[in-house]
Length: 347
Image (cartoon, rainbow, N blue to C red; front, side, top):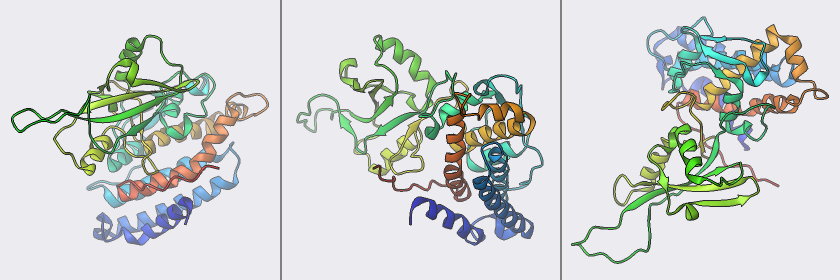
């Protein structure tokens, strides 16, 4: 089965397989809500496939809300229902990348964030910032975006020793071991690497405590025009770390995302605070798009005009890719663990 089929079958299988593993087993109300909500999610996603981009955000967002209700019914102790979005658009007049969404009270967004282990955001975040933090969307930027993007993170599966490895006796200290990873950045190689590092590191919580692997000359490497890599390292937390320990170290900084060995550093929206998970970042984007589509239909339609709008193709792409990504992230939210697929072959 391909990845799409695996996810579709998995979602339908969860309609029964989660009953005895979650809080559904203790409550008929939870079970009935869970079943109805997942049915509505499935129908909204099917509806989203047959409407144009003018309407699709409404189906996608409300389908996602129903999937969120299924997650809270299955996993949240105590009060698990909600009747508000928990979000608010500050102003719909700016250009789409500058439209900002913020939490508003307690509602679906907060409940599902808690149910899925996502960091709650407290500040307003622009659509442009959210967009650039989602790995699938960084390659199709909206016109006018200036925010920091998610960047590829390639982690080594074993520890390394800096410098030349030499023999050491039981009376001497063993060589220090490090965990290594490379970050790939889509911009020109900086001339002032120290200044670039000083600006770059604080934006990505996953790089906390990182240092360059070797000298600047060794750590920075040009891949091609407007793409370079930087090799970082961290002191190993213990000697002879197992692969599972190393993977766990990197999972806390740049979790594998959707596919085996695909890791991304995502920028922070608030100082020293992890961003919302990709699921909840998509939630914020789709809420914003649905509000624009419902209450600013002229603005939304003009943004989708491929003959006039420079962002139309990117917006269409985002709504197309959401049809693939959202079911995957929903299945992970229901399972409360990652589901990593084999990467499709590129031809």
